[in-house]
Image (cartoon, rainbow, N blue to C red):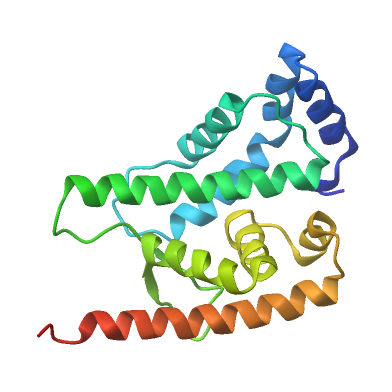
Length: 197
């Protein structure tokens, strides 16, 4: 049984929502290794020399979740979807901080091998975030699927359960979203190479 479908997760989420103080610690203990593994995958896609560590990424995501008041979790899939979105925001915020500190320097980069499997393409975290925001305006569900699969590390069946759609719909939307992102990010990179007037 996958950690994302383990029944104790739902029980702990309900207890956390009901303000039981020990529930958050138990929940973190139950899911931390799964989330650290996903954080390692995300951080491995970034450029060499980044300072964020997997445990720090998970802890920052949990701190942000902990600061939210009156959170009502629909179910464990909802929880893992929110954690995926939060980890994305942490990475984007880190990239923004870095570029603000080093004006003119190159921002943090990640490799989105799931979008461009034929050859590894380095993408800037901020470019990916902007592209996902644009995709969400066109097709919100596709953007959610990319976030859950790429940032959350969820397999197609878990994404289908989280979004209450079929696995075939997830796979179809995933293919379309990857193609759209590949096109968008390739054009974006080409525009950066154009000489400025």
